[in-house]
Length: 282
Image 1 (cartoon, rainbow, N blue to C red):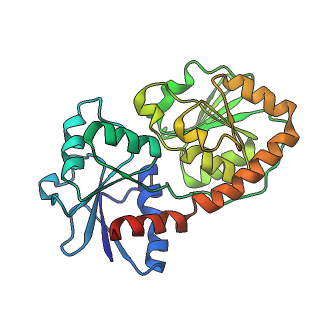
Image 2: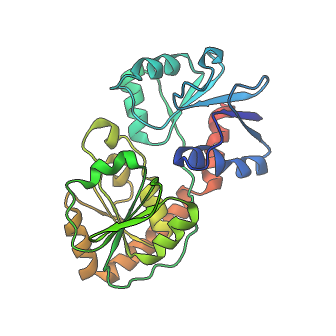
């Protein structure tokens, strides 16, 4: 199969890495050619991404092309674009079961769930007392930190232009290597999440990658986090989770080790690539 992801190559975007860049080599191994282009390719199975105006959406071919939906934009000004393309697509793919439910409600389409590929290698869990924690993600999600109470230093790894510190908060510009270094500095990763529909439909790639790096994850409840509730601490009170981890390091070690086994099976690049192949060949 000849697959063309209709988007722009951008390793700074998590969606591109998880949905395109990481599974691509595995798809080649499975015998499928993978291309990235900012326009559809003739003779290829074209998979369109996001909603960027830079893409020639007038070339989207109804009944033939696929549409990958990774965020809930059905309540905003992009609603018409998403409903129109979902209705026209041969297949619709998505990055979480909760997002598939939203697509079904809004468009009537049954979307195929393809898990985000694991980005970071699995390393052994170490515990140094849980004296600091880490948050990572796009700056657009800063609002989730506003109401979170913590009792220790926090490092934020995000798309900021330069590093900086203020009181107990350290800002680190995102890069793959910066993430690896930050993971080494902290025992705990916090993942607060909003209660709105868009937030609740998000996938669990941050929790999965933090587990892979041996971290204790404290996260707000979402449908995608529920899948991992045996391996991460899911709570409405992030500080409660942090303090529980400090008081139960043996439990933390068991949870993380089991979560790493699960992540390696469920979210490997091979698992993601196989899901892509099955969906596009159907």
